[in-house]
Length: 165
Image (cartoon, rainbow, N blue to C red):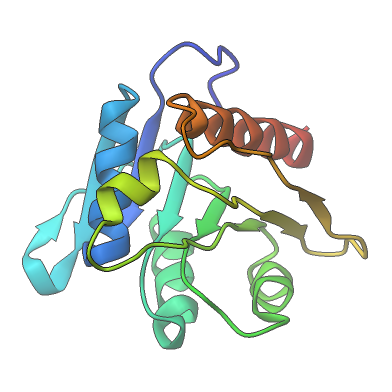
């Protein structure tokens, strides 16, 4: 993890559908180095030493995606952007003994790029195998606040740093 909050991060985005494209748009606008992995679209860039990996795939393939990341030695933490069933993050953290955050997207199909740059409710849930508690932090965001995405990034980094020591 790059400790300097102002330096560009190396970030993987797994899945390049509506959520993945919006996530890439946000991260590139924030100046980060983004690698996209979506074999269905023949995009197979994957940074092993990434600072963060966002999983933007349907819930039914989350296990397979984390298994792939684990097998390839991609550094955690992994941040699931997909809507998943209650308990999924804890189950996966325990199964793979790794740090996993859940940061669901609230995107409208007609305006995903605007919505990702101006989030109105960014909840984060962090889980590591063996930890009974869930850390949750909500960030208040004004709909006209053009730094909302930076606030969300700062909270993600804060939670990841707290989880990884």
